[in-house]
Amino acid sequence: MRAKDQSTAERPSLASLDVDGTGGPAESPMQRGSRALLRDINVSLLIELVRRSGAISRADLARQSGLSAPTVSTIVGQLLERGIFIEVATAPSNGGRPPVLLSVDPKAGYVIGIKLRGDGLTTVVCDLDAQVIATEEASASLVGDPAAAIQAIEQETRRALRAAAVPRSKVLGVGIGLSGVIDSSRGVCDFSHLLQWRDADLAQPLRRRLRLPVWVDNDVNTLAVAEKWAGDALTARDFVTLSVGRGIGLGIVIDRSLYRGARGGSGEFGHMIVEPGGPKCECGRFGCLEALVGEDAMRRRVGERHGREVSRDEFIAFAAAGDGATLEVLDSAGRKLGLAVANMITLLNPELLIICGEGTDLGSPFLTPVVTAVREQTFADLGRQVEVKIQRWGNDVWAVGAATLVLRESFSLPGPDEKSHAIWHRPGPER
Ligand SMILES: [Zn+2]
Image 1: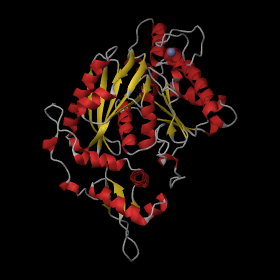
Image 2 (image 1 turned 180 degrees about the vertical axis):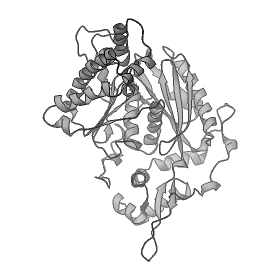
Image 3 (image 1 turned 120 degrees about the horizontal axis):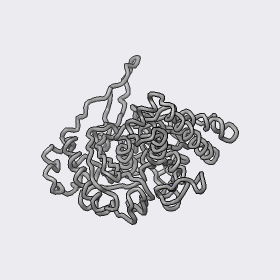
């Protein structure tokens, strides 16, 4: 059981919340101090070990980290003082003094995650366990208009913080996920065909307006980060997240690091051309996987079979009810997608494949042929050995993924430019 958070002395009052929308107080020295502390490599190593174990003694922490007992003791003292660690009750031992175990207080900090779409945005406030405290939905026309997005993000961040009643001093930053080729080191969207943006700088203007750290990444990459932070891939070394739905994307984690490619354009799985001269894709080319097995393409084909337009809700209902035409379309699309996924697995040999995205709503008529193809069409035994997980899908999952960008960056887990912060590379207790 978790002990109660006793760090009330340090907790800022709700009065410091930015409820008037004026930008709030400038960052306090304490906030800056906390972030500097979190970026220390030994500090983040200890936090990561405590987070992974749930509860751990100081002695085990020293053993597993390879740090000296005095170093561990000093850092643990600082983290207890700041309320990031808490001491928790221990199991009864047979005589002697029971060891005091350490845990991360999930309420010690909060992060904001935002998923941008062409027609609006979803904003969540999460705690350090990536649990959602508040969700806000807003519609806005963002296609071709990055300035509108910046405006909307600022407004929604303030709204979500008010709804969550979280003190601003405990907010570690804002993470933003969107479809496209993203330069995550600068927080710039180089290109997004979905949003029709080019060279849209999000991070810099938002840092200025919100006075908070801001990170931006491709939305499918954020899902991989979320799985690594608090999901099914917590202990996985090489895994992929395949998102299916309107778009088809791939988040690639190799040796515990997100693989972004030279320009941030890796994982554009849906834009592999699989049928030369096939249907036109949103990216402007012809015969992309997405143009054949994306949700809109499948729904259009079901509509053709029924001789009328079919809404998304109807499409999902047809799939669930076993409508003949729908099942045929889903089976054929599932096989096509499955073949592409099998080829990808032959190429990357991941240990774990996580299938997620709104397309999972279509259920087994769509997903079973995908998994079957993976098992049967992959080279040698690679497809039979890969673990396949299908993620339950909720509307806020994309935004939670974006929020975990902040968690990862705040705790110095490695990105491509942080080779020295090799926490994920260090053999953890579970491997
Ligand atoms: Zn395409």
